Image (cartoon, rainbow, N blue to C red; front, top):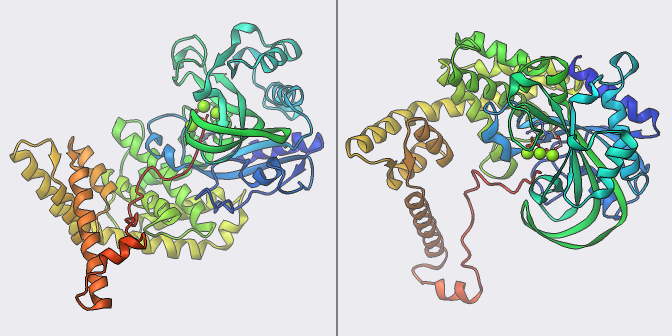
Length: 477
Ligand code: ATP
Ligand code: MG
Ligand code: MG
Ligand code: MG
Protein backbone atom coordinates (compact mmCIF):
# COMPACT_ATOMS: atom_id res chain seq x y z
CA UNK A 1 0.00 0.00 0.00
CA UNK A 2 1.41 3.37 -1.06
CA UNK A 3 2.00 6.08 1.54
CA UNK A 4 -0.57 8.36 -0.04
CA UNK A 5 -3.15 5.56 0.23
CA UNK A 6 -2.44 5.16 3.96
CA UNK A 7 -3.52 8.77 4.44
CA UNK A 8 -6.57 8.41 2.18
CA UNK A 9 -7.77 5.36 4.07
CA UNK A 10 -7.33 6.89 7.46
CA UNK A 11 -9.15 10.11 6.56
CA UNK A 12 -11.87 8.19 4.70
CA UNK A 13 -12.51 5.89 7.65
CA UNK A 14 -13.02 8.77 10.06
CA UNK A 15 -14.94 10.87 7.57
CA UNK A 16 -17.46 8.03 7.27
CA UNK A 17 -17.77 8.19 11.03
CA UNK A 18 -18.78 11.81 11.17
CA UNK A 19 -15.37 13.52 11.28
CA UNK A 20 -14.67 16.70 9.33
CA UNK A 21 -11.48 16.42 7.29
CA UNK A 22 -9.19 19.34 8.18
CA UNK A 23 -6.21 20.05 5.87
CA UNK A 24 -2.71 19.97 7.34
CA UNK A 25 -1.57 23.24 8.85
CA UNK A 26 1.78 24.73 7.83
CA UNK A 27 4.88 23.40 9.60
CA UNK A 28 5.42 26.92 10.88
CA UNK A 29 3.49 26.79 14.12
CA UNK A 30 1.01 29.55 14.82
CA UNK A 31 1.48 28.58 18.43
CA UNK A 32 4.20 30.88 19.79
CA UNK A 33 5.44 28.24 22.24
CA UNK A 34 6.64 25.99 19.40
CA UNK A 35 9.09 26.52 16.55
CA UNK A 36 7.58 23.88 14.32
CA UNK A 37 4.46 21.76 14.44
CA UNK A 38 5.47 18.52 16.16
CA UNK A 39 2.14 16.70 16.45
CA UNK A 40 -1.24 16.48 14.78
CA UNK A 41 -2.99 18.13 17.69
CA UNK A 42 -1.03 21.39 17.59
CA UNK A 43 -3.51 23.28 15.37
CA UNK A 44 -6.34 22.02 17.61
CA UNK A 45 -4.82 23.19 20.88
CA UNK A 46 -7.16 26.21 21.28
CA UNK A 47 -10.17 23.87 20.94
CA UNK A 48 -8.91 21.55 23.67
CA UNK A 49 -8.28 24.53 25.92
CA UNK A 50 -11.77 25.87 25.25
CA UNK A 51 -10.35 29.11 23.80
CA UNK A 52 -12.01 28.66 20.42
CA UNK A 53 -15.08 26.83 19.16
CA UNK A 54 -14.17 24.01 16.77
CA UNK A 55 -15.81 23.83 13.33
CA UNK A 56 -16.92 20.35 14.34
CA UNK A 57 -16.59 18.24 17.50
CA UNK A 58 -15.18 15.38 15.38
CA UNK A 59 -12.25 16.15 13.11
CA UNK A 60 -9.54 14.22 11.29
CA UNK A 61 -6.29 15.31 9.64
CA UNK A 62 -2.96 14.25 8.15
CA UNK A 63 -0.57 16.76 9.69
CA UNK A 64 2.97 17.53 8.58
CA UNK A 65 5.30 17.34 11.58
CA UNK A 66 8.95 18.04 12.37
CA UNK A 67 10.60 16.74 15.52
CA UNK A 68 14.04 18.23 15.95
CA UNK A 69 14.82 16.31 19.14
CA UNK A 70 14.64 13.09 17.10
CA UNK A 71 17.43 14.23 14.78
CA UNK A 72 20.09 12.10 16.46
CA UNK A 73 17.94 8.99 16.09
CA UNK A 74 17.49 9.40 12.35
CA UNK A 75 19.07 6.60 10.38
CA UNK A 76 20.07 4.73 13.52
CA UNK A 77 16.67 3.50 14.65
CA UNK A 78 14.22 2.00 12.19
CA UNK A 79 11.47 4.43 13.06
CA UNK A 80 12.51 8.08 13.53
CA UNK A 81 12.33 10.79 10.90
CA UNK A 82 12.72 14.53 11.43
CA UNK A 83 9.80 15.16 9.05
CA UNK A 84 6.87 12.78 9.18
CA UNK A 85 3.11 12.81 8.82
CA UNK A 86 0.78 12.22 11.69
CA UNK A 87 -2.71 10.95 10.99
CA UNK A 88 -5.20 11.80 13.67
CA UNK A 89 -8.80 11.73 14.78
CA UNK A 90 -9.95 14.29 17.30
CA UNK A 91 -12.94 14.57 19.56
CA UNK A 92 -13.56 17.88 21.26
CA UNK A 93 -15.72 16.85 24.19
CA UNK A 94 -17.58 14.33 22.05
CA UNK A 95 -16.55 10.64 22.33
CA UNK A 96 -13.86 9.63 24.82
CA UNK A 97 -12.00 6.36 25.47
CA UNK A 98 -15.04 4.16 24.82
CA UNK A 99 -15.23 5.62 21.30
CA UNK A 100 -11.57 6.08 20.38
CA UNK A 101 -10.33 2.62 21.31
CA UNK A 102 -12.87 0.61 19.26
CA UNK A 103 -12.41 3.01 16.28
CA UNK A 104 -8.66 2.38 16.33
CA UNK A 105 -9.06 -1.35 16.59
CA UNK A 106 -11.58 -1.49 13.78
CA UNK A 107 -9.44 0.51 11.37
CA UNK A 108 -6.27 -1.48 12.10
CA UNK A 109 -7.81 -4.94 11.87
CA UNK A 110 -10.46 -4.50 9.16
CA UNK A 111 -9.36 -6.32 5.95
CA UNK A 112 -7.60 -4.15 3.39
CA UNK A 113 -10.19 -5.14 0.77
CA UNK A 114 -12.72 -3.53 3.09
CA UNK A 115 -10.96 -0.19 3.60
CA UNK A 116 -8.90 -1.14 6.67
CA UNK A 117 -5.23 -1.89 7.26
CA UNK A 118 -5.68 -5.63 7.68
CA UNK A 119 -3.40 -6.20 10.68
CA UNK A 120 -3.86 -9.65 12.27
CA UNK A 121 -5.24 -9.17 15.80
CA UNK A 122 -2.56 -11.29 17.42
CA UNK A 123 0.13 -8.93 16.09
CA UNK A 124 -1.19 -5.98 18.09
CA UNK A 125 -0.07 -5.05 21.60
CA UNK A 126 -1.25 -2.08 23.60
CA UNK A 127 -0.03 -0.08 26.57
CA UNK A 128 -2.02 2.02 29.01
CA UNK A 129 -1.09 4.49 31.75
CA UNK A 130 -0.40 2.56 34.94
CA UNK A 131 -3.61 3.44 36.78
CA UNK A 132 -5.89 3.67 33.75
CA UNK A 133 -8.19 0.74 34.53
CA UNK A 134 -10.84 2.30 32.33
CA UNK A 135 -8.72 2.10 29.16
CA UNK A 136 -7.43 -1.38 30.05
CA UNK A 137 -11.01 -2.50 30.61
CA UNK A 138 -12.16 -1.19 27.24
CA UNK A 139 -9.26 -2.86 25.44
CA UNK A 140 -9.98 -6.14 27.17
CA UNK A 141 -13.76 -6.31 27.50
CA UNK A 142 -15.08 -4.21 24.62
CA UNK A 143 -12.40 -5.01 22.08
CA UNK A 144 -11.21 -8.43 23.22
CA UNK A 145 -7.45 -7.90 23.54
CA UNK A 146 -6.09 -10.59 25.89
CA UNK A 147 -4.73 -9.24 29.20
CA UNK A 148 -1.20 -10.43 28.42
CA UNK A 149 -1.02 -8.10 25.45
CA UNK A 150 -2.10 -5.06 27.49
CA UNK A 151 0.80 -3.50 29.35
CA UNK A 152 0.82 -0.78 31.97
CA UNK A 153 3.46 1.92 31.95
CA UNK A 154 4.38 5.07 33.83
CA UNK A 155 4.61 8.79 33.08
CA UNK A 156 7.63 8.58 30.80
CA UNK A 157 5.86 6.39 28.26
CA UNK A 158 2.14 6.78 28.74
CA UNK A 159 1.44 10.37 29.56
CA UNK A 160 1.38 12.77 26.62
CA UNK A 161 1.92 16.51 26.55
CA UNK A 162 3.34 18.96 24.06
CA UNK A 163 6.59 19.59 25.91
CA UNK A 164 5.30 23.09 26.59
CA UNK A 165 2.32 24.36 28.62
CA UNK A 166 -0.97 23.20 27.15
CA UNK A 167 -3.26 20.20 27.18
CA UNK A 168 -2.12 16.74 28.24
CA UNK A 169 -3.36 13.41 29.46
CA UNK A 170 -2.73 9.70 29.84
CA UNK A 171 -2.35 7.78 26.63
CA UNK A 172 -2.59 4.33 25.15
CA UNK A 173 -0.08 3.26 22.52
CA UNK A 174 -0.59 0.57 19.92
CA UNK A 175 2.35 -1.55 18.78
CA UNK A 176 2.73 -3.89 15.86
CA UNK A 177 4.70 -7.07 16.50
CA UNK A 178 7.07 -7.52 13.56
CA UNK A 179 7.87 -11.08 14.50
CA UNK A 180 10.72 -13.20 15.77
CA UNK A 181 13.20 -12.06 13.13
CA UNK A 182 13.16 -8.61 14.77
CA UNK A 183 14.08 -9.67 18.30
CA UNK A 184 12.84 -11.39 21.36
CA UNK A 185 9.28 -11.83 22.46
CA UNK A 186 7.88 -10.14 25.53
CA UNK A 187 5.95 -7.13 24.38
CA UNK A 188 6.85 -3.52 23.73
CA UNK A 189 8.35 -3.02 27.17
CA UNK A 190 11.72 -3.67 25.57
CA UNK A 191 12.62 -0.75 23.32
CA UNK A 192 13.68 -2.89 20.43
CA UNK A 193 12.78 -3.09 16.78
CA UNK A 194 10.41 -5.98 17.17
CA UNK A 195 7.49 -3.93 18.51
CA UNK A 196 6.85 -0.85 16.43
CA UNK A 197 4.71 1.89 17.94
CA UNK A 198 2.26 2.87 15.22
CA UNK A 199 -0.46 4.82 16.98
CA UNK A 200 -0.95 6.76 20.15
CA UNK A 201 -4.38 7.53 21.59
CA UNK A 202 -4.27 10.45 23.99
CA UNK A 203 -7.02 11.03 26.50
CA UNK A 204 -6.72 14.81 26.77
CA UNK A 205 -8.17 15.92 30.03
CA UNK A 206 -5.72 18.14 31.90
CA UNK A 207 -4.25 21.57 31.50
CA UNK A 208 -0.51 21.80 32.15
CA UNK A 209 0.81 25.11 33.41
CA UNK A 210 4.49 24.36 33.39
CA UNK A 211 6.58 21.63 31.76
CA UNK A 212 10.10 21.08 32.99
CA UNK A 213 10.67 17.70 31.36
CA UNK A 214 8.80 14.72 29.98
CA UNK A 215 7.96 13.53 33.47
CA UNK A 216 8.18 16.73 35.48
CA UNK A 217 5.31 19.16 34.99
CA UNK A 218 2.52 20.95 36.85
CA UNK A 219 -1.14 20.24 36.23
CA UNK A 220 -3.21 23.40 36.69
CA UNK A 221 -6.59 21.69 36.42
CA UNK A 222 -9.05 19.91 34.19
CA UNK A 223 -9.76 20.94 30.61
CA UNK A 224 -13.31 22.16 29.94
CA UNK A 225 -14.13 18.71 28.52
CA UNK A 226 -12.71 15.24 28.04
CA UNK A 227 -11.18 15.03 24.59
CA UNK A 228 -9.52 12.60 22.23
CA UNK A 229 -6.34 13.28 20.30
CA UNK A 230 -4.72 10.48 18.37
CA UNK A 231 -1.54 10.27 16.33
CA UNK A 232 -0.71 7.54 13.88
CA UNK A 233 2.66 7.60 12.13
CA UNK A 234 2.04 7.40 8.39
CA UNK A 235 5.63 6.35 7.63
CA UNK A 236 5.52 3.63 10.28
CA UNK A 237 2.27 2.24 8.92
CA UNK A 238 3.81 2.27 5.44
CA UNK A 239 6.81 0.34 6.81
CA UNK A 240 4.56 -2.46 8.03
CA UNK A 241 2.23 -2.40 5.04
CA UNK A 242 5.07 -2.36 2.52
CA UNK A 243 6.92 -5.14 4.34
CA UNK A 244 10.19 -3.19 4.52
CA UNK A 245 12.72 -3.00 7.34
CA UNK A 246 12.49 0.68 8.29
CA UNK A 247 10.79 3.96 7.44
CA UNK A 248 13.62 5.06 5.13
CA UNK A 249 12.84 2.16 2.83
CA UNK A 250 9.19 3.09 2.33
CA UNK A 251 8.11 4.34 -1.09
CA UNK A 252 8.69 8.10 -0.86
CA UNK A 253 11.87 8.13 1.24
CA UNK A 254 13.31 5.24 -0.73
CA UNK A 255 13.28 7.27 -3.92
CA UNK A 256 15.55 9.88 -2.34
CA UNK A 257 17.75 7.26 -0.70
CA UNK A 258 18.17 5.31 -3.89
CA UNK A 259 19.09 8.38 -5.92
CA UNK A 260 21.56 9.50 -3.22
CA UNK A 261 23.29 6.13 -3.46
CA UNK A 262 23.44 6.42 -7.22
CA UNK A 263 24.81 9.97 -7.16
CA UNK A 264 27.49 9.21 -4.59
CA UNK A 265 28.47 5.83 -6.01
CA UNK A 266 27.63 4.09 -2.75
CA UNK A 267 25.57 1.00 -2.24
CA UNK A 268 22.83 0.56 0.35
CA UNK A 269 23.17 -2.59 2.46
CA UNK A 270 26.93 -2.95 2.14
CA UNK A 271 28.31 -0.96 5.04
CA UNK A 272 26.51 0.08 8.22
CA UNK A 273 27.93 3.60 8.36
CA UNK A 274 27.06 4.28 4.74
CA UNK A 275 23.55 2.98 5.34
CA UNK A 276 23.09 5.38 8.25
CA UNK A 277 24.33 8.26 6.08
CA UNK A 278 22.02 7.33 3.22
CA UNK A 279 19.05 7.22 5.56
CA UNK A 280 20.01 10.57 7.07
CA UNK A 281 20.26 12.08 3.59
CA UNK A 282 16.88 10.66 2.56
CA UNK A 283 15.17 11.98 5.67
CA UNK A 284 16.90 15.34 5.81
CA UNK A 285 16.46 16.20 2.13
CA UNK A 286 12.75 15.49 2.37
CA UNK A 287 12.50 17.34 5.65
CA UNK A 288 14.38 20.37 4.30
CA UNK A 289 12.22 20.39 1.19
CA UNK A 290 9.00 20.35 3.22
CA UNK A 291 10.22 23.09 5.55
CA UNK A 292 11.29 25.37 2.70
CA UNK A 293 7.97 24.74 0.95
CA UNK A 294 6.20 26.00 4.08
CA UNK A 295 8.24 29.18 4.12
CA UNK A 296 11.08 28.38 6.52
CA UNK A 297 14.39 29.97 5.44
CA UNK A 298 17.86 28.99 6.62
CA UNK A 299 19.12 31.24 9.39
CA UNK A 300 21.06 31.37 12.61
CA UNK A 301 18.28 31.04 15.07
CA UNK A 302 14.96 29.42 15.75
CA UNK A 303 13.42 27.37 13.00
CA UNK A 304 15.81 28.86 10.47
CA UNK A 305 18.61 27.23 12.37
CA UNK A 306 16.78 23.90 12.49
CA UNK A 307 16.49 24.03 8.70
CA UNK A 308 20.10 25.09 8.26
CA UNK A 309 21.26 22.27 10.47
CA UNK A 310 19.17 19.72 8.56
CA UNK A 311 20.42 20.89 5.15
CA UNK A 312 24.03 21.00 6.32
CA UNK A 313 23.80 17.53 7.80
CA UNK A 314 22.50 16.27 4.44
CA UNK A 315 25.46 17.81 2.65
CA UNK A 316 27.96 16.47 5.17
CA UNK A 317 26.55 12.98 4.93
CA UNK A 318 26.70 13.15 1.15
CA UNK A 319 30.39 13.96 1.50
CA UNK A 320 30.90 11.07 3.88
CA UNK A 321 29.43 8.90 1.13
CA UNK A 322 31.89 10.30 -1.36
CA UNK A 323 29.64 12.91 -2.99
CA UNK A 324 31.55 16.18 -3.04
CA UNK A 325 30.03 17.94 -6.04
CA UNK A 326 27.92 21.03 -5.94
CA UNK A 327 24.44 20.37 -7.25
CA UNK A 328 23.78 17.09 -5.43
CA UNK A 329 21.23 18.77 -3.23
CA UNK A 330 19.48 20.12 -6.30
CA UNK A 331 19.11 16.64 -7.79
CA UNK A 332 17.87 15.16 -4.53
CA UNK A 333 15.48 17.99 -3.81
CA UNK A 334 13.92 17.38 -7.22
CA UNK A 335 13.39 13.74 -6.26
CA UNK A 336 11.81 14.72 -2.93
CA UNK A 337 9.49 17.18 -4.68
CA UNK A 338 8.39 14.52 -7.16
CA UNK A 339 7.96 11.88 -4.44
CA UNK A 340 5.86 14.09 -2.17
CA UNK A 341 4.09 15.88 -5.01
CA UNK A 342 1.16 13.52 -5.16
CA UNK A 343 0.14 14.37 -1.62
CA UNK A 344 1.35 17.98 -1.75
CA UNK A 345 0.82 19.41 -5.26
CA UNK A 346 2.02 22.83 -4.09
CA UNK A 347 5.56 21.40 -3.97
CA UNK A 348 5.53 20.89 -7.70
CA UNK A 349 4.11 24.36 -8.30
CA UNK A 350 6.75 26.06 -6.15
CA UNK A 351 9.69 23.80 -7.00
CA UNK A 352 11.74 26.63 -8.53
CA UNK A 353 11.54 28.58 -5.27
CA UNK A 354 12.47 25.58 -3.18
CA UNK A 355 15.52 24.97 -5.37
CA UNK A 356 16.68 28.57 -5.10
CA UNK A 357 16.74 28.40 -1.31
CA UNK A 358 18.37 24.98 -1.03
CA UNK A 359 20.92 25.60 -3.80
CA UNK A 360 22.06 28.81 -2.11
CA UNK A 361 22.47 27.08 1.23
CA UNK A 362 24.46 24.32 -0.42
CA UNK A 363 26.79 26.76 -2.16
CA UNK A 364 27.40 28.70 1.06
CA UNK A 365 28.05 25.62 3.11
CA UNK A 366 30.38 24.01 0.60
CA UNK A 367 32.45 27.17 0.76
CA UNK A 368 32.53 26.98 4.56
CA UNK A 369 33.55 23.34 4.43
CA UNK A 370 36.25 23.96 1.88
CA UNK A 371 37.98 26.61 3.92
CA UNK A 372 37.33 25.14 7.38
CA UNK A 373 37.96 21.45 6.87
CA UNK A 374 41.73 21.83 6.49
CA UNK A 375 41.86 23.84 9.73
CA UNK A 376 39.69 21.27 11.43
CA UNK A 377 41.94 18.40 10.28
CA UNK A 378 44.95 20.29 11.54
CA UNK A 379 43.31 20.78 14.94
CA UNK A 380 42.53 17.07 15.10
CA UNK A 381 46.13 16.18 14.26
CA UNK A 382 47.45 18.56 16.95
CA UNK A 383 45.11 17.13 19.59
CA UNK A 384 46.13 13.60 18.74
CA UNK A 385 49.79 14.49 18.82
CA UNK A 386 49.37 16.07 22.23
CA UNK A 387 47.55 12.93 23.40
CA UNK A 388 44.35 14.82 24.14
CA UNK A 389 40.93 13.24 23.77
CA UNK A 390 39.24 16.56 23.09
CA UNK A 391 39.65 19.46 20.70
CA UNK A 392 40.63 22.57 22.62
CA UNK A 393 37.97 25.23 23.19
CA UNK A 394 40.03 27.87 21.41
CA UNK A 395 40.25 25.69 18.32
CA UNK A 396 36.49 25.22 18.26
CA UNK A 397 36.17 28.97 18.77
CA UNK A 398 38.54 29.78 15.93
CA UNK A 399 36.64 27.44 13.62
CA UNK A 400 33.44 29.22 14.54
CA UNK A 401 34.74 32.74 14.53
CA UNK A 402 37.04 32.69 11.53
CA UNK A 403 35.67 29.90 9.35
CA UNK A 404 31.97 29.99 10.19
CA UNK A 405 31.91 26.45 11.53
CA UNK A 406 28.89 26.15 13.81
CA UNK A 407 29.77 24.37 17.05
CA UNK A 408 27.47 21.44 16.35
CA UNK A 409 29.33 20.82 13.10
CA UNK A 410 32.61 20.77 14.99
CA UNK A 411 31.05 18.44 17.56
CA UNK A 412 29.80 16.07 14.89
CA UNK A 413 32.99 16.04 12.89
CA UNK A 414 35.05 15.54 16.05
CA UNK A 415 32.89 12.65 17.18
CA UNK A 416 33.43 10.98 13.80
CA UNK A 417 37.13 11.15 14.66
CA UNK A 418 36.48 9.69 18.11
CA UNK A 419 37.23 13.04 19.76
CA UNK A 420 35.35 15.24 22.15
CA UNK A 421 35.30 19.02 22.19
CA UNK A 422 35.98 21.29 25.14
CA UNK A 423 32.56 22.91 24.92
CA UNK A 424 32.95 24.78 28.15
CA UNK A 425 36.09 26.46 26.88
CA UNK A 426 34.30 27.25 23.63
CA UNK A 427 31.38 28.81 25.45
CA UNK A 428 33.65 30.87 27.67
CA UNK A 429 35.37 32.34 24.63
CA UNK A 430 32.03 33.01 22.98
CA UNK A 431 30.88 34.85 26.08
CA UNK A 432 34.05 36.89 26.25
CA UNK A 433 33.63 37.84 22.63
CA UNK A 434 30.05 38.88 23.22
CA UNK A 435 31.08 41.02 26.12
CA UNK A 436 33.81 42.64 24.06
CA UNK A 437 31.28 43.38 21.35
CA UNK A 438 28.87 44.91 23.84
CA UNK A 439 31.58 47.04 25.33
CA UNK A 440 32.63 48.23 21.88
CA UNK A 441 29.07 49.11 21.04
CA UNK A 442 28.69 51.05 24.25
CA UNK A 443 31.92 52.91 23.73
CA UNK A 444 30.76 53.86 20.27
CA UNK A 445 27.56 55.30 21.65
CA UNK A 446 28.98 57.01 24.71
CA UNK A 447 32.57 57.80 23.96
CA UNK A 448 34.71 56.10 26.58
CA UNK A 449 32.23 56.42 29.37
CA UNK A 450 31.68 53.11 31.13
CA UNK A 451 27.93 52.72 31.41
CA UNK A 452 27.95 49.21 32.79
CA UNK A 453 26.84 50.46 36.21
CA UNK A 454 23.89 52.13 34.61
CA UNK A 455 23.13 48.99 32.64
CA UNK A 456 23.17 46.99 35.81
CA UNK A 457 20.78 49.36 37.49
CA UNK A 458 18.46 49.09 34.53
CA UNK A 459 18.74 45.29 34.53
CA UNK A 460 20.17 45.16 31.04
CA UNK A 461 23.01 42.77 31.68
CA UNK A 462 21.29 39.47 30.91
CA UNK A 463 23.44 37.80 28.22
CA UNK A 464 21.88 37.37 24.83
CA UNK A 465 21.44 33.76 23.84
CA UNK A 466 22.87 33.22 20.41
CA UNK A 467 23.52 29.56 20.72
CA UNK A 468 20.62 27.23 20.19
CA UNK A 469 22.24 24.56 18.09
CA UNK A 470 20.60 21.80 19.99
CA UNK A 471 18.04 21.29 22.71
CA UNK A 472 15.61 23.69 21.09
CA UNK A 473 12.29 23.97 22.80
CA UNK A 474 10.44 21.49 20.69
CA UNK A 475 8.45 19.05 22.70
CA UNK A 476 7.63 15.48 21.88
CA UNK A 477 6.30 12.46 23.62
P1 ATP B 1 8.63 6.86 19.83
O1 ATP B 1 8.40 6.35 21.23
O2 ATP B 1 8.76 5.77 18.83
O3 ATP B 1 9.72 7.88 19.76
P2 ATP B 1 6.56 8.73 20.37
O4 ATP B 1 5.86 8.03 21.49
O5 ATP B 1 7.54 9.77 20.69
O6 ATP B 1 7.27 7.63 19.41
P3 ATP B 1 4.09 10.11 19.77
O7 ATP B 1 4.41 11.42 20.36
O8 ATP B 1 3.18 9.21 20.51
O9 ATP B 1 5.45 9.33 19.37
O10 ATP B 1 3.53 10.38 18.29
C1 ATP B 1 2.42 9.70 17.72
C2 ATP B 1 2.87 8.79 16.59
O11 ATP B 1 3.66 9.49 15.62
C3 ATP B 1 3.75 7.63 17.04
O12 ATP B 1 2.96 6.56 17.51
C4 ATP B 1 4.49 7.29 15.76
O13 ATP B 1 3.71 6.42 14.96
C5 ATP B 1 4.64 8.62 15.06
N1 ATP B 1 5.98 9.22 15.28
C6 ATP B 1 6.45 9.82 16.39
N2 ATP B 1 7.70 10.27 16.24
C7 ATP B 1 8.05 9.95 14.98
C8 ATP B 1 9.23 10.17 14.21
N3 ATP B 1 10.29 10.82 14.70
N4 ATP B 1 9.26 9.70 12.93
C9 ATP B 1 8.19 9.04 12.41
N5 ATP B 1 7.06 8.82 13.08
C10 ATP B 1 6.96 9.26 14.35
MG1 MG C 1 6.58 6.14 22.40
MG1 MG D 1 3.80 7.62 21.68
MG1 MG E 1 9.61 9.85 20.46
